[in-house]
Amino acid sequence: MGVNVSPRQLRDGDLPARVRRILLDSSLAPSCLELEITESGAMDNPTRCIEQLHELREMGVTLAMDDFGTGYSSLSYLKRLPLDRIKIDASFVRDLAVDADDSALVQLIIAMARQLKLTVIAEGVETQEQVDLLSQWRCDEFQGYLFSRPVLAAAIPGLSRVEARAHVA
Image (cartoon, rainbow, N blue to C red):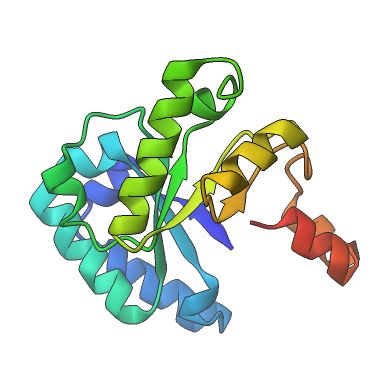
């Protein structure tokens, strides 16, 4: 289950304690929770952010950088974050088949993430051509309307196992 973390939540010093309480109250395994942060949110207070993310990762929570490429983080800062996954922003994916700059940037992001041993997810995938190119460049996962519109949590139990695998990234 992926949950977006706001910049305000990252600034608060009690995010790991709150997540721990929620996990205990819900009996959800930490490995089933993915917290998604943005570059701009992580840059508000880099030291506190890194400390909190390390604590969350030690709990077993998966950590992802959402909308990667739209913020202003430096590569030296990025390598210090205890991330598991990078989600390439849809604005780069949208025109990658026809825009040489977007194509080059996406390939560079994938190569960089692979060197950092991060899983790469492409957001905003809407065409098979995008899937084919991203697969060729070794992108790990795809997310977008080609697979499913967003699904409310209450609707997930009604999906078949095959549909659920195709819809949940």
